[in-house]
Length: 412
Ligand code: NIG
Ligand code: FE
Image 1: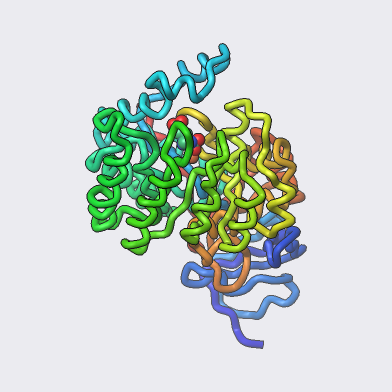
Image 2 (image 1 turned 180 degrees about the vertical axis):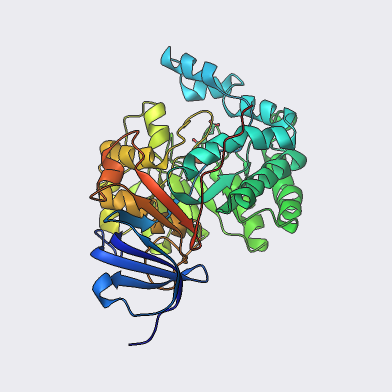
């Protein structure tokens, strides 16, 4: 047998490989070796080849999963919307608050007013909260700046969080989140500005991995989104879309038409939308946090998505308004309870399917050649990840084969 030299060897582990399309892919009494940041060997320990190992860890039977992937967040913002939470509890709806100048617009005011250092220090505890649960890849959207300088500031802060944590941060341009006050009554002009000025400039600075929009009666029309997506396509940038959250706008089919990486929310998704997503390979990103906080009653059509073979991701949607949920494990649990995902679907949704929603095929499973982003848990079965709410059994996180410690949360 060929020798196996490794930088890291995890032994005596219960491996949740997520091999194949369903189930856990469990390997009992398993071992996993990493070299140069990638998984070099995985399988039963009894079959482990001999070789030189720099660091060996006996996990005493602990559970090993791929590092988690949160593929939809708005965690970079300033201020808070706790007053809005209280108003919603008194009966006001999200739409009413948005139309009255609250909602996204109020976070835009606070985010524009914050300087880059303030924005970074306010966002860091939220980012750290995700990292503390073994999340190793995080998508972060802009969309609370809505002018070039403020959107750039948000994207730079997102990238800074990636650098200082060593984790992968993917940045998504969400300039089409809401209409900024200076474009009141001129939504088409704002979309033109995004497509011809703001997006090309931010892309030229290397700050944009994908383009997103809010397609909704209180957001932008499908025709406006299509013009923005044309601009994205011209720059070679992939697209994704907040679609069918509060009403059916045909957003999922629109995203599919542009070979979108994902369509997200989807409570009002139609059979036509499901068919279009299945044909284009667009991932359905489920966001049970927003469903929960808005006290929604209509769940996305999970059974039909499953039957059509549309891959389903699970994410936090961490944002100050509709989903102040800073826990991907909780999102997994809510996806099971509210949407009836199986615990294995929830874990796949928060690992390799979430990665696919970001266009990343190199992570999310324990398989040779995948990035060695790994989480280790004090659990005796992987269903325990989603079967609790508010329980974090994380023991270790490895990022590209190196142990990573949670960021210290700066006091402010
Ligand atoms: O994904 N729907 C629009 N965007 C966010 C909400 C943002 C906010 O309310 O600040 C979402 O739910
Ligand atoms: Fe969102």
